[in-house]
Picture 1: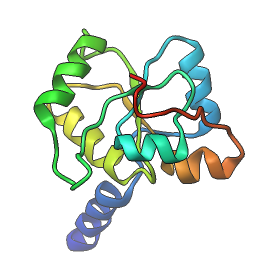
Picture 2: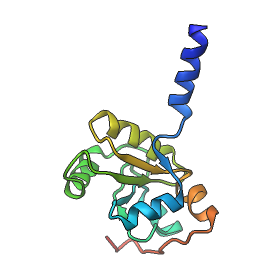
Picture 3: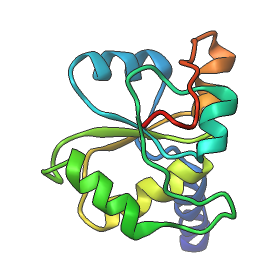
Picture 4: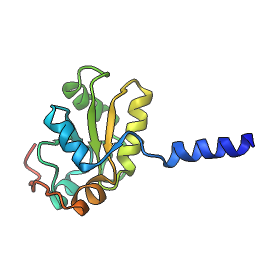
Length: 137
């Protein structure tokens, strides 16, 4: 019985939602001043657009490597207090879930992610993106 409970708990941790919110919740929090951060690559920003008002802060490089130093520098400029909430998203919520769990482990306690990412949690739900070009910051 203990093994079954441990297996269920592990499955929930691995596959469960990490402080996941839907698009309407994101908009509500964003209107309250909670920063929204797009962690995708510049090519993804250009091809699918971004959520209006989101800050572009690439975490994973186009080849899949984490750029921790650059991301943390930029995050520190935006989020001065680890107890303050912010929202992260990527394409499908895989990268944001991984990053969110890591940020939680290092002390950020109010990290939210867009459930399904921009593809399944935003665009597929009928919400519009803001088109950009790579020269924009």
